[in-house]
Length: 206
Image (cartoon, rainbow, N blue to C red; front, side, top):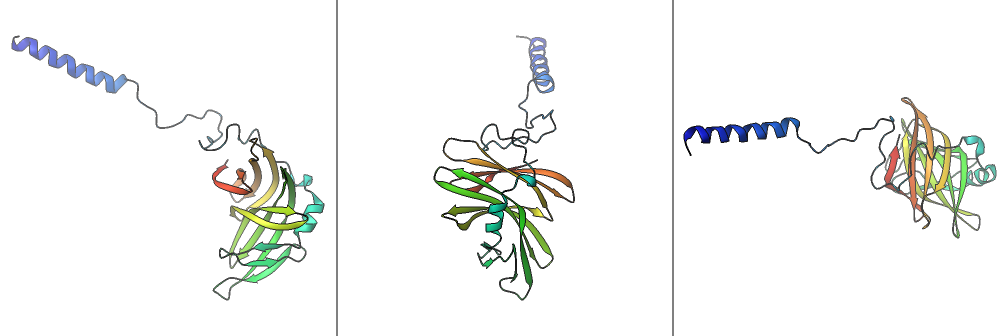
């Protein structure tokens, strides 16, 4: 083959390579979302979305449950220290310091029966120093004895406006939808409950 033929082949190969990278199909590294709703994480059960599990308002709260919760014991620090509420409130000293703190039960409580287990979901605000953190708390209710089993942080300065619980699986898993407001506006957080506790790796924020 003469030099002219070799040169023609080389030019063709180069053009093919350029064309592939310029116009060829490339794997996408992003997911297009035309609805404006954030994509649900891959490990969240199918069907768990903001639209299908919109929280109800606090007007649907169970006042009888809320009354019992207002005199229960709750955890207030990371080391598991507890205080007993009186009329839904308590003061405490922050572990390892002389700083004072307070805890206030929210005004929402909803029940969720899972087989023989009775869960109660409510909100809690813990203030330690200048930090005010809002939580959703899952209590176990066995023979009217309440035990706090699991906590999920909602955010600093957040105000919870609605809670809802819906089944998502036949094995007892369910999702807690939390509506809340903070300095940035209104939001929804979805929390998956598995084996009686929040599975925080499956939580989704909208």
